[in-house]
Structure formats: C-alpha cells, structure tokens
Image (cartoon, rainbow, N blue to C red):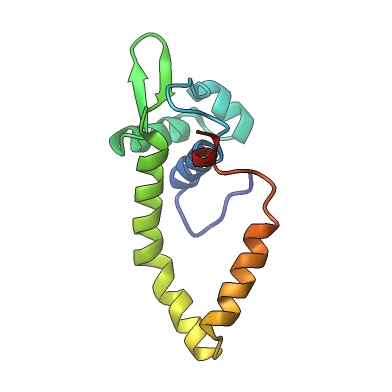
Amino acid sequence: MEFKDKDAIYLQIAAYVSENILLGKWLPEEKIPSTRDMAVELEVNPNTVIRAYEFLQSQEVVINKRGLGLFVAPDGPQKVKAYRKQRFIQQQLPDFFRNIYLLDIDIKELENMYKEYTAGLTQPKADENK
C-alpha cells in the first residue's frame, strides 16, 4: 500500500480495511488481521493501526470480541458504504461537478463512460454474493 500525503495514515489504513470489506475479502462476522499483522503487512507503526481500528470501531464497522480480536460487524459493509457515500458527497462531489461544468462534459457522455467502466469490472460486489 502506498500512502498519500493528503490524508492521515490511520485514515488511509481505515479506508484500506473498509475497501476490503466492501470487496467481500473480509465478510461480516469474520476476523480481521491483528494490529501486529496489519502493521507488518503495511510497514507502519502498530499504534497507527490501533488508531485506524479505533476509528473503525467508532464507526461501528468492526467490533471487538474480547480475547478473540476484531471482527467485521454484521452490518459492517452497510456502515462503510454509508460513511464513504456521505464523505464522497461532501468532499469530492462538489469538485467533480465543478470540473464537469468547467470542461463542458455532458451527463450522457459521463453515463456512457460509467457504463463502460462498470462493464469492465471483474469482481462482483459483496452485496451480489447474497
């Protein structure tokens, strides 16, 4: 994983965990990697992973089962999606709208590009596995 300067590292780790949940790599009620394992995998300080996991716990995406570790919450994927959707709408969508306006990109053109993009995706979403 390559970290970007824009966001705090713990938030990038939380986003990485969230993406794995959304992709169905870590399913609801499944154990996620320990703090130590994640720190080794991402080559970061374990305290940074702890902070990321605490953030995800505060969002109710993961739950702590005392003595067993952290697990994806039963509704973890829905919580991730709701949080990321809200953040996208507030932080990224205004810039996106401004750019398509400034570049005079038609909505139909965007719709076609989006359809092409989604047609090229090979991994099904976690929701489709149900």
